[in-house]
Image (cartoon, rainbow, N blue to C red; front, side):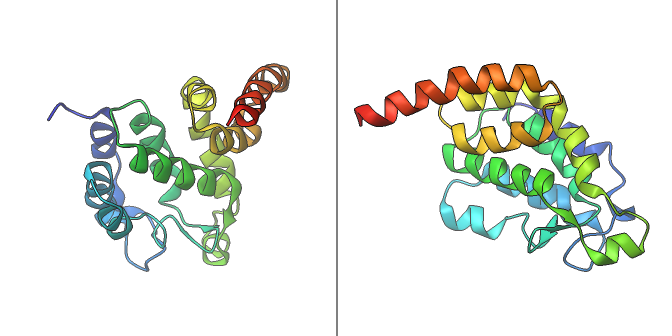
Length: 170
């Protein structure tokens, strides 16, 4: 298997120093993320979900910030359709959630802001996702992260119209 930039990025993070939604440190996140990328079945995806780690009921934990960067990197890699959708769903959670109360008490009241900053590294990848089949998830993510509102409005106008036309044909 070729080297995955997302997993190389994971090596750069001190996961053991980060708080995780499961109550442990984030030390297990790289292994969980690797299993998710390599999942071939829906049960394998469910068994390696990031839910309960990056978030609990849309409330974010510290590990969500570097996981956002891993997801953005992974979206540029060769992934199964099911894994790609799972990653986009997790990315939406990271940018649309808010800090868990324990994170607020620990001094991290705006984890979602840092997740949005990390997600912006992948704006063009997200526009590609929007244009090629994962429109609504990518659209919701871009709506929250792309600071260039004129660009977002222009692309949204072009892409949403195309998607609506395709939907009418089917």
